[in-house]
Image (cartoon, rainbow, N blue to C red):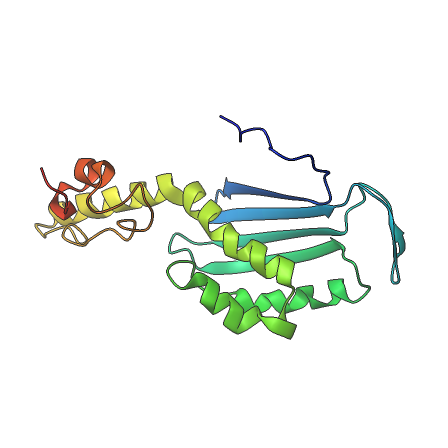
Length: 196
């Protein structure tokens, strides 16, 4: 269901589009790619580019992260095709500082520490922050397969499978995963805190 009709007359002044895609590679790694495009519905002067026409990207940037199943960045590529300033593309090599970082709790804080301020590009850092959720969605089936394989191996060795008693990190991460909600009650009844 779309948003309700706007209640006041208005005009479009800016459009930002994000696109994220996840790819499972044959070598067991994952490529997660992001693309951002900012446009205006009107033309305007720009002291570095001369003029930016209506619909022409003010910002157009790309990211590709290569991740292992632990969600650690093995490789990264950042590209700035369009920016409002001539110097914008010069910062993209600095994104190599993200290699070795692990996506997960505290991800955005780690990014800001390594690539914040003058060490990065606001738009690329923001996109890299959002890329983590696309990575998780892309990698979920492989993570589930790995977890099942580990449980099976532990049982075959006569051991208690690890992680069985651990509270999943998803619990209380959003409304749907509230510890007292129906999703947790259904998937992880041992961690359900609601009333029956």
